[in-house]
Image 1 (tube, rainbow, N blue to C red):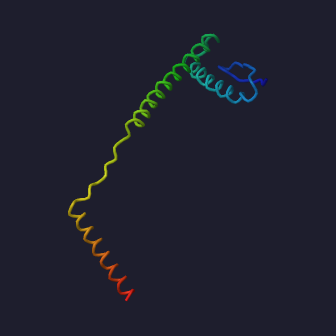
Image 2: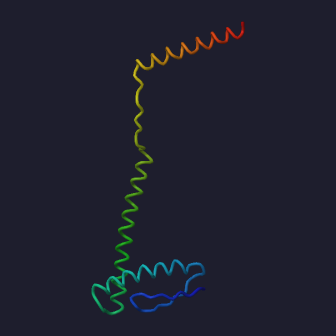
Image 3: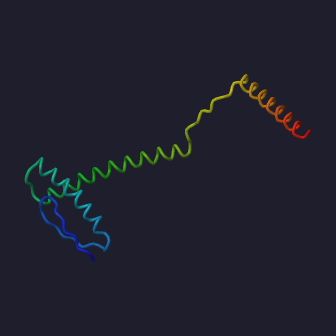
Amino acid sequence: MAQVDFFIGNKNYSLTCQEGEERLLKRAASLFDAEAQAILEQAGRMPEPRLLLLAGLMLGERAAALEDRLSSLERELNRIKTNPPRVEVPVVPPSLSEAMAELAARAEALAQKAEDQLSA
């Protein structure tokens, strides 16, 4: 087991964790300490249990907001997957279609004429 030392609200703590989880624990402690420092800057000195409670509640509030946002994004993604946006394809006007068909017929006639001349 690994041991991780960290600070929360200017107090040193030490916890053991599974090997490989040190980075995650340090990150979590850093987030917790940031909330505690923000509380201390606003409220000044306070008892440790109250500071830890407030910092935990602040992190819980942030996590709840992120979960709400994630749920909203997942619903939007599912909506897009089940009902993809329509792609508008321009319609070729009939007059242009006729002109293109005429050009294609001319090109085929020219190709046939060239083949006939090469065969002769």
